[in-house]
Amino acid sequence: MNIEKFATEKEPELPHSDSSSIGSSHVDDKQLLRKLDYKLLPPLTLLYLLSFLDRSNGCAFIDESEVGNARLEGLTADLHMTGDQYLTGLTLYFVGYVLFEVPCNIILKRTSPQSWLPTLTLVWGIIATLMGVTQAYPGFLVVRFFLGVAESGLFPGVVFYLSMWYKRNEQHYRISLFFSAASLAGAFGGILAFGIAKMKGVGGYNGWRWIFIIEGLVTVVVSVAAYFFVYNYPATAGFLSEEERARIHQRLKDDSDASQDEAFTWSNVLKATSDPKPTIITSLGYSAAQAQLLTVPPYAFGFILTLTFAVLSERFRMRAPFILAGSSLAILGYILLLSDPRPGISYLGTVFAAGGIYPATAIVLSWPANNVSGQTKRATANALQISIGNLGAVLGTQLYRTESRPRYFLGHGFALGYLVCNLIVVTTLRLVLARANAQKSKAERDARISDSEEWLGDEDPRWIFQL
View 1: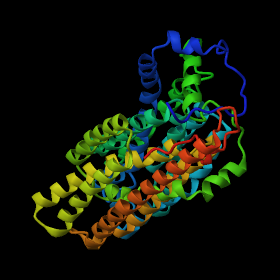
View 2: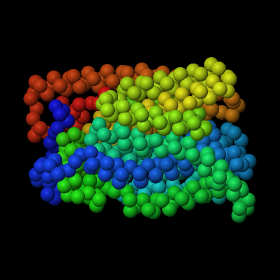
View 3: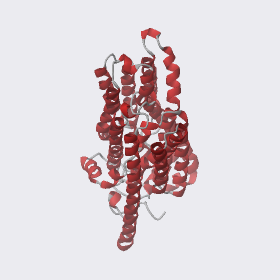
């Protein structure tokens, strides 16, 4: 590789890692990656699957999985809510989510994944369960807000966490696998809720209450187990041999800053908030998916394309072209939704919207993890990006109001506009990063910077942005 190798402040060496031949002579990288995938991805994906079920069975979509299905099973009638009051509850979820994403990732950086991520899961499982015993509209609002607070730390936390295990070009595929749990939750959440709702009358509870109670209790049980199957970082993971540990350390040292023992500093948090690059690549159009994907086939199509785009993006080492392709497909979907009221055409538009938004969003979410150097700065940037993106969801829950059924011109129009803006923003960002790479290459040639010099973060000439 002609890039990305660097050395920074010296960290304590791992046991038996004083020789680079240990990691390179006896450990096969492909087998090592498979081992990491099997150990890290299933538990994290399960947590996000539960998060999306608990959230969607009560929150983000117009009639999304859990709250949407609960609404069908009598939630609004039992709590004496109007359609607009129901949408206010959905909006409050995202208010809590947006406000606490950055603080949650700061806590993650200052604690550990093994303690923080399961604790978040335990808290939101309890809150989701309480949703099932809510008796009045004010209680609904309170629960929705604090569910957003509790769930806000998982996604940005996992994106940062994976950046501490995998090389930059390997992260996107793993983040996409993790993110695909959202589409799986959408595909099967309705089926699961349909079955649970058959418990209507048990214990004197309506069906919608049992949806929240059972799925919340399952989340609580899984969260307790998660304390044992979520690992911290490579230096302490018990499933690794010393040779594997040393190999991971060397791979990360040659590729990014993940092997450094970086202390938390507020100055790095401020660097992330003042750097325009992470905030530019927000997930435009993400809320549009949350407002539309109501049935299994669109979610399933989104799941398939998410994984397909992830494989191709990693193979060709490109990000922007696949974001543009996904956004373009979603634009076609919204044009169909706006232009033709026939059910078949509208349904096809929904499928195209799902198939475009999900893979594009997955790549967008991995871009800062690829391009931001400095652990604290990257953790903050990941959370900040998702927070800004979810502001669109706050707006989206108010755009798809009940009186605008069935065509939802206002909501669809905003979604289409956001996606068109996404094409412009992503194209511009790619040009900016390509220009920065050219300047870095020239600076490195002129200065002949050696690997032993002080590392300057993503301003360093040796750090090449992924396009």
